[in-house]
Length: 427
Image (cartoon, rainbow, N blue to C red; front, side):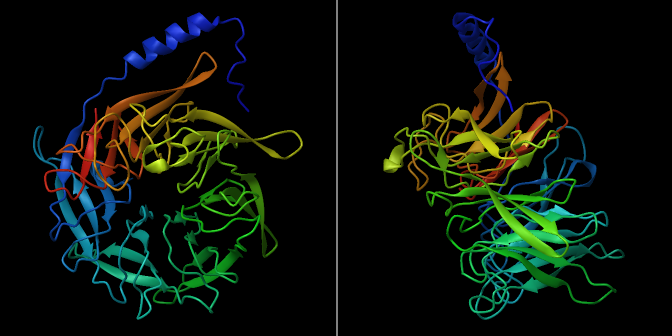
């Protein structure tokens, strides 16, 4: 566990000067790589990016497309220096059995297949799917296959998957559903690949949330430790019904859940976590909440959100450390996307709103930011790398960023030349 004020030999004044100088280095530019046109190319890319071959990226756009149900796309780098990035639609959802509204990030296996979830679709009752998008080895044409369609209430398998999937070394997929399960408060599930080519994937519910102290409505995806423990968050439930961070551990063939932290909200804690956690090499967990910590934000929301660390103490319990509390002004508000790290104590993320520019939209004032969190002289400080202006540069980044060759890449849900979102790079 870190102790933010442990370096007592630094005077308060010296630390303040250092932080001001560090913040002053925050100037960065933004480059629009692709602007969605709300046509067959898709729009509203709520899901984030993942790395592809040769400097490309893969992602999802939850709206528009050829059938107005979203797309899976690849963003290809310029063929020559100074050229334009291009988007290639790999699959356009039809909104029926194949799924609809792909909100989540993708995962990619060693063979180049992509896996994700759709919040709707999969059959007449629209309870969501897990899908695979694969290229044909000879033609290069991509096709989609639903590997599991959720059955909805009364069946117990869960429904409405929203968070991204975790792909294990054995090829199994782990994910969450916001609703469904034995008590209808969401599930954690496992999908095991077929034992032979052409066979069916097998779904197993590892845990059904009860909606009480154990949590409710897991919007985010999961991460997994080297020892096989799964970690995630719920947006509701817990001691205060304001969300939890939890673990799932397997003993034999039985999985058990443990609540690592119940978010309390108010002036002392965040609440309502909706993003996946980050697990560092020391076993510490990092994440964000979009609200909480008491600062009055636009729309009467109590708290603009915060970034936190969860660390295991000697007793085996977990303790929370608040790394940064967002103020809702130039520093940003509502951090909903996942955190990215360089593994050396620096984190990058996005806020859905805030940043100083005025944006009159449903997510509140401010068009959003890309920020950096770093520990300086024992104190965590936030630096805004870019504040979106709500025009052609984009607006409302809510999926986090990925890094490549010293740059950060991400998506905005709104803005761009057609107002349907964009893909950007910083600097």
